[in-house]
Length: 271
Image 1 (cartoon, rainbow, N blue to C red):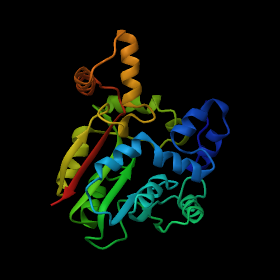
Image 2 (image 1 turned 90 degrees about the vertical axis):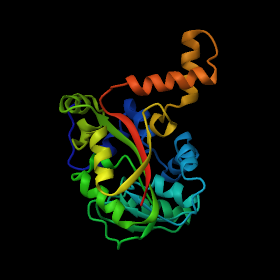
Image 3 (image 1 turned 135 degrees about the horizontal axis):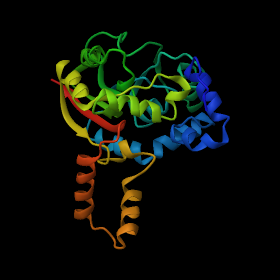
Image 4 (image 1 turned 135 degrees about the vertical axis):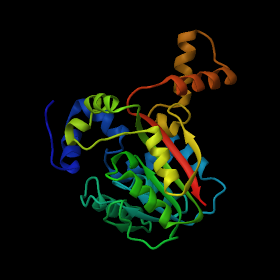
């Protein structure tokens, strides 16, 4: 398959037309109708654990950076946040046009800005929460993006940055990109080392409170789940794995998994 497209919209349209790519389409929440896809995301184990990470925080203003077609913005709004969606792509399939359609159909309020995360069009101290799903690894300037996140967060405001591709080296990056099923379509996937993510966040003045390793949460595992992983391991080992042993296995997997492009998530706050 050698197709390369000039826009993410045209790549996704092609992907949705291919019978052998429907699992990827569904896993990426590009399936239609859009509102049903967004509702499925809101019910997913990934969002349940995302919601759990935000529990105990007063629901105020939330900025969703790189909002795509709006599934995370929709989930935040359904949970009671006052949502601003930032998405530079204008398209009706994967961009700001899709977000407008989704929120109009859902009869939910949203503010949409068609701009990139490196240049946030907001004053300092604007948001209680900055959320981004699968965004940092696309940044052209990771350090600048993190500085902008800090700038628009209010004091003690929360950031939650999920599902970021991690590599160990430049050699890993080439391997990751060669194996990525969507990079071949559009050519704009990327990944950073774990240290690069951490240093960019800390260097901006943000405090990292938690780093979720690849197997630590359904936030990173989805569309797989810890429940399914535990069942599969139980079948292989031929006995029901108790909680303490499963936690040990997850810890082992998190330490020893070095697959290029594995997913990490980061949460913390502005001091």
